Image (tube, rainbow, N blue to C red; front, side, top):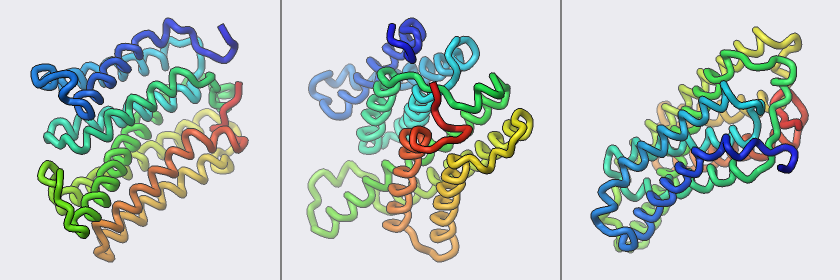
Length: 276
């Protein structure tokens, strides 16, 4: 086995999750291929996928010989997107699920093929009870931001179609007002949980590390993202800017989250950087 890769047996449950999200994605993108009868089970399959994913990720935090690192970060992000999908499926918003299901599939698949790189801070702190709390809160926030991002993309697309008076396929979409309302609630949900996650991370650092955590570049960038979403909420609540403004804030902010998870930890040194 190449060095830096987690044992394959620890990833076997994720194969079931990948198959489930593949089925769900086909149900949205190629509905005629799986048939009407099979499409009725899409929501149940999503529950199985998310439950299996959550159990596997938690078990890995406690039982895996490999410290938490880059694959787990991507896996947690995929889980967050999957949770967002369950909320969408509950409200019968097929157009949103069409974007969320493939996103969860691609991110989870990527997490299974990238080399394992652990977070540098774990070499000093070891495992802490704060770790699952910190990660759980942060990825709950990511779920909200992922939903806000998807709704933002759909809002801008629908708005453009309406301006061009191209109404084909629009009958299946929620109204722009409904999309804007969902987008705001998802962003607010993400902001609250990201705030709690940052607080839990700070508590973990204060209890475990001898040096201050605030000098870490990832902390500064995360605070910048937090401030970006906070500004978006203020622009809406105080200045009354909504719709297109909220969508643009959501798309840019989620892009920052992706960069933070995928790129920043490799580019800069610090407690959050990925080591060996």
